[in-house]
Length: 171
Image 1: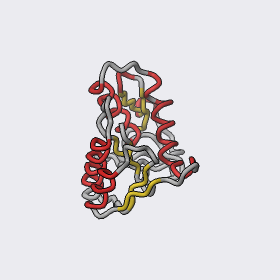
Image 2: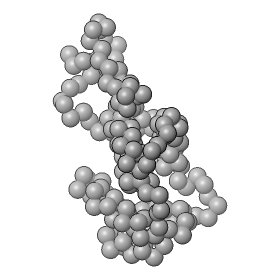
Image 3: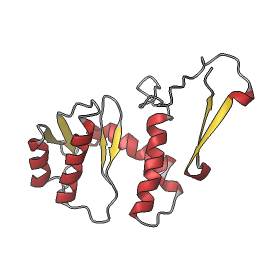
Image 4: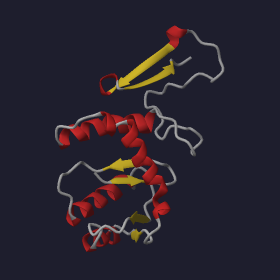
């Protein structure tokens, strides 16, 4: 999988899984990312990548064609990709380390469910603990310190109950 993270919003797009990534696959994923990001209001001027050989000429050509710049991270500078490294640590510890995958379709379905949780329910440090994607059902949460009854608490389960998210129902 290939992760694309917008640093300003912390919104992540993940490519579909593959067992044989090559330079042309990486270039296609970069093109898909830019084409998905721009209509959703995410500005893409730079695509930072590591120094893997897969980020070669095809990747550079696609990114340049889409009016962005491919920027390789500096050599021997692991902290230049701290945001995406933190995301990778989160997805590994909160999701991937708890499952055995039986193919790329299974991996993709688990990742999709976890990303819905990541963008819509999980609070994010460094961005005011606000959700990355606002709830589509129009509900608003109650004030944090307002008294509530236990019957007003709702549980949303994902991945067969592996991920549970509790929230108060709308007032």
